[in-house]
Length: 68
Image 1 (cartoon, one colour):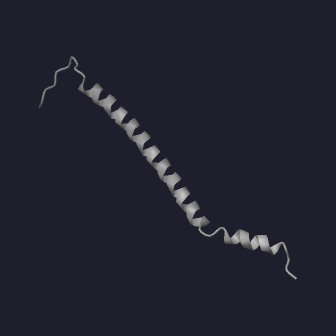
Image 2: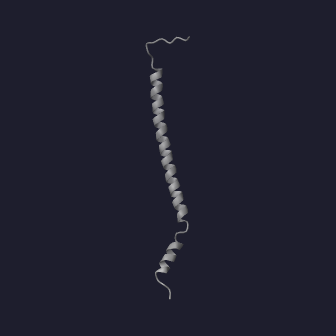
Image 3: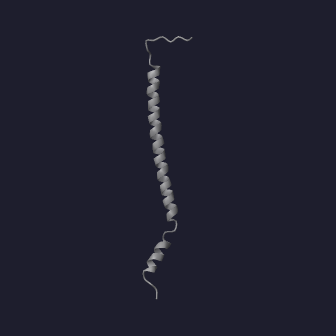
């Protein structure tokens, strides 16, 4: 006699072929997207800081520069 409970379990397991691979691809895509987002945000922040420092350094002032 066949147990009716075993049949859905077997068919359910057969339908999961490739699911691990798809989950890996989706997680990889999410991590790459987050990484590029952080890199873009940090480069903008660093670029803005450098621009501000450059403007401060290059600003004309009253002191005279003499080379030794």
